[in-house]
Length: 537
Image (tube, rainbow, N blue to C red):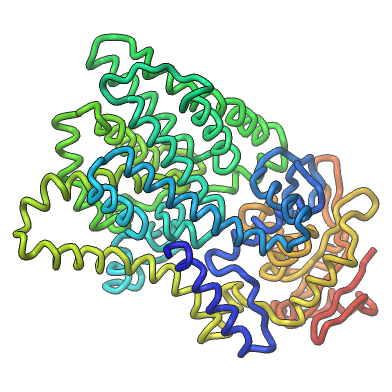
């Protein structure tokens, strides 16, 4: 049922598109800007690649074995002869199912009482924060330009239902984390002494670590660091070397270490990925936004956290409180991926929310008010998920202009050109990538749907993004016709091979010279309505 909920907005958008014949719904509702980068990675896998080249930038460069998950999905699309977008959503559904099974397995590993594990599953499965209330009270509370991000409305990896709605790798990573922690809950219980082997959970931990390092390497950082802190705490409290606990930490750390070293080296010595890494910054919002984003769940968890700190019992509480504290601290450690570390943070928080509910809140609330209190809690916890999943529908159901502005919809002529380019336009010209010049918004679709490189297509995945975006704007304003000759970069040179001219590109021209660079392009190679494609070389 929960996974079906993530499909209903997609079905609604597809149905509503039938009433808008001049535009096409492009299949992505949540953060299409990033979603198109995932499709671009899948497109490279579809073409047989296992090394990823930045698809939203024109410079020739060496590929790297990163984003292997989406490259694999591209290979899967090729083997099944299905479009990458279909594979994207099918795997998203499967990843969502896996995540929810894993979350319930974690609840079952912690609690023998069915009521407690069901409470955990429901809270972690559909719970969200109070961001909806913050926006209702202050519409300016959601300002992405100043990093005023309410997690429950803008950071999907932080909440399982929102993650399952957004893409495949977020729920897959959350599910892997849940299973990993469920194993640690079991093996760290008092009286357990079985060493990890290939015949018990040790093998699964190794495989899960490998998968997590491939699918979402940032997700392994909080639990990996938390384990290290946990071992130190056990050593200090018990005045012994925690060799048994360390033996179980090794299957998580060791398989992920080569990936961490490789990612670090690639982003240092590969110029293209060094430039990408320098731009790919996702800072955490101020702490008060996290407080609002986790809202009522945090309130419910406070008694459980206080009890865990006070008693610090080894039966689950020690690991969970260390994980929660370490994860919260890592959100503000100076790295490029602070927000990405929210993946899985809800798990220890809801763990303590259930502890607090069972040990404190049920004793505080009179029995006759318990049922209304539970109903009220869920009424307050669900709206942010509904808002996050529903607001994207506005552009496809009620407001065509909003859908076009937010890259949910695309004019039919532009969509037809994408299909034509994917089939007809070659990927390489003279042993270098084919480069297409188009408006910034349309360039995202060109890279994502056709696999052809663009001059500017994404604020993170275009090398020297701001400079190239301005040059694209200047070209369509008639101020920089030299853009067709490209630029030199790292002893290589790129140049433009095809130019798109349509309503989006003409709308960029504002000055007296607007259109001057377009006038000398000659006859178009192909036209679809008002959209034309010109070949330069």
